[in-house]
Length: 160
Image 1 (cartoon, one colour):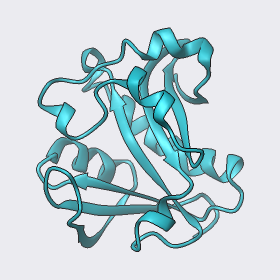
Image 2 (tube, one colour; image 1 turned 135 degrees about the horizontal axis):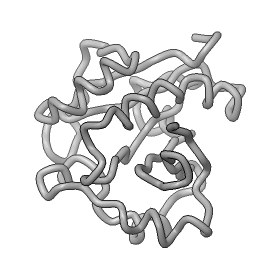
Image 3 (tube, helix red, strand yellow; image 1 turned 90 degrees about the vertical axis):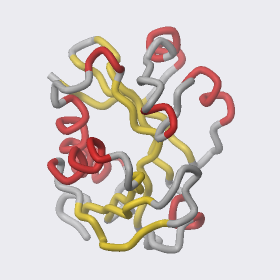
Image 4 (cartoon, rainbow, N blue to C red; image 1 turned 45 degrees about the vertical axis):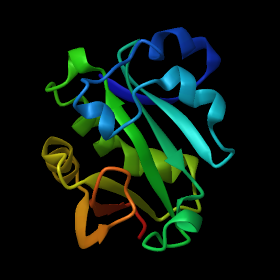
């Protein structure tokens, strides 16, 4: 059973072991342990759980609309999503992403939509987001560190 939990220090030693392949490291965070202390107040870390085992990680960025003009004021961003390299291909990311609209609606009542960008060369992630209910806005974000990115979004359950 896949679930989403707020990151807490008690999970630190478990999630710091999560890793991606060298090819994927250009598209997402590759060292969670270094990133956590550097998070801004608007960046909320979450853990993807499979039963009682951490299997993935992502950030919800409540300041996303202030950084990116394509995100409306009542939207937030998903960033730094990763599933451990040894557990990829099992539908974990898809299942977690399908849970997100309802989860966000419960935890962030002011939010109506979720936005993300995915590198145009990261075809597996792009397909995953599509199969999870995200829509390609048909616009590109050109400020990514490794090339153009698709802008994708989904509505929060019951809103948007």
